[in-house]
Image (cartoon, rainbow over all chains, first blue to last red; front, side):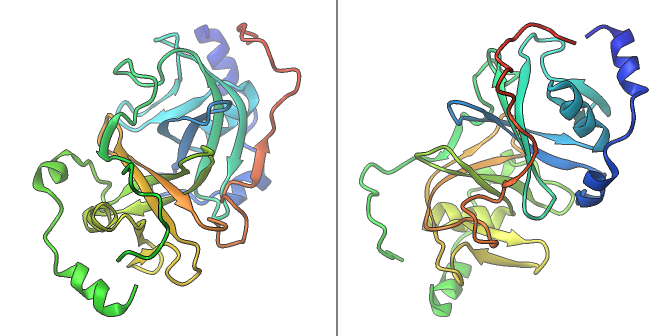
Length: 135
Length: 135
């Protein structure tokens, strides 16, 4: 998105006050946003949103987050081309977590993998088919 | 799980030091854990783990979290019966988020719904099928 357009976004109105009142933010003013591929169900990544990032995401349908390390907004795919076209956004029962369902272009992860969750700590057990209390 | 068994768990060894060294925790020592139904792909909830909750989850294959409000460990389903049988656990590329794939018994949400993400802020547009840059 050209800089002029981003500045235009910055002049838009604030997040809907009724919605803002329902959000429970962490001490930094952020909510975790779980990002999921809308059709396959893959969990792609987790990012963070403040009110403004959520407002931009809802109004543009382009996933926009707050970068905690760079301390700035980032539109996913703006530099990589790996856009996230937002299909739906949901808030959880506690008002402290967002679920963003997207159509992800290419890899979601900056390492080049489809999802960020490739480091498996515990694999599925082939023989684990029972639900009895084994503990 | 009977109290005696939980106390037994408490006497077990600490989280694998190599794994512990890879975790990037928030200031409270926690990582967000995205919880997903392993077969349907539904994102059920988000909870929080410290090292000990992760160790218990990996060793027992019962999803165990740290409750930030109650300031104690909780085994999902221990009181509700809505157990989470852990199928796999993955760490993301930054080492700061977990993905826990489970077989959820009954509703995951304390409100009685299958998932915690029933409050839709932005619905899918039926006509939203194009990927062109419309902004």
